[in-house]
Length: 74
Image 1 (spheres, rainbow, N blue to C red):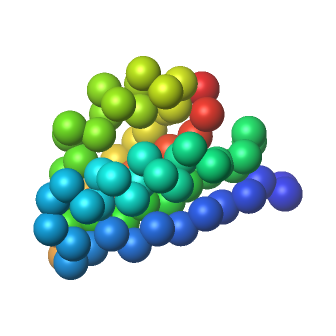
Image 2 (image 1 turned 135 degrees about the horizontal axis):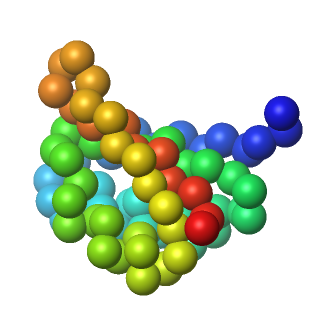
Image 3 (image 1 turned 90 degrees about the vertical axis):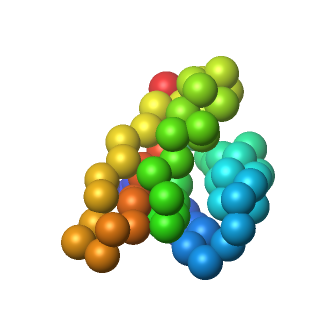
């Protein structure tokens, strides 16, 4: 489909590093692209920051207990 996917594996990092890395990545995310962020924890504190910046997100919990969040421009 031509949709650009960017992947960021933030597992194994201590907070607030995963959130900082995700926010840095979405700052340069092209319109129409999706960032796939993999984190150890459910990134609840990230959601309001994404909303303020005009992004939508969907998080799914993985079988190993980690979380994958798909982030797109609204």
